[in-house]
Image (cartoon, rainbow, N blue to C red; front, side, top):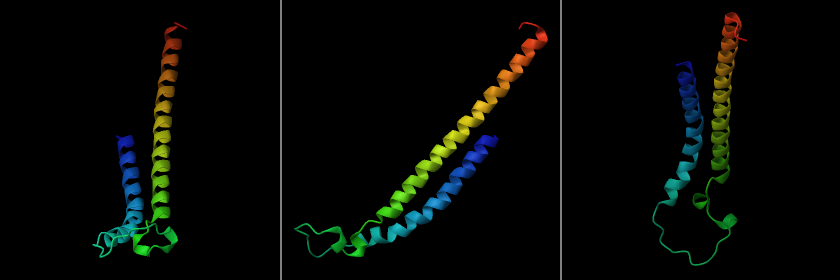
Amino acid sequence: MKTVTSTLLAVVFLAAFIAPLGAQGSGAANQSQTPRQEQQTEFVPLDQLPPQEQLPAPRLLIAAYVFVLAALFLYVVSVSRRLGTVHREVQRLEADLRKTGRR
């Protein structure tokens, strides 16, 4: 039960941390959905585009890395806890074997 609670707490923390990052970039996405009067017919370099048509790439990239690293950290913590449980169980079984004299 404690593992489930700590995992749930970590997910809520991540959601609270990443949600503002996504909300900052949503303004540009909403503005780019407005209908345009003229169709673009040629290549325009990124640095010449208006700000509302540029993607907030650095924020999205950082959010993706934070999410992946947090998921990896949670996985490592989960595996280490399970490994500790198995280690304690093996020690308990070895102690039981020594008590019964089978080893």
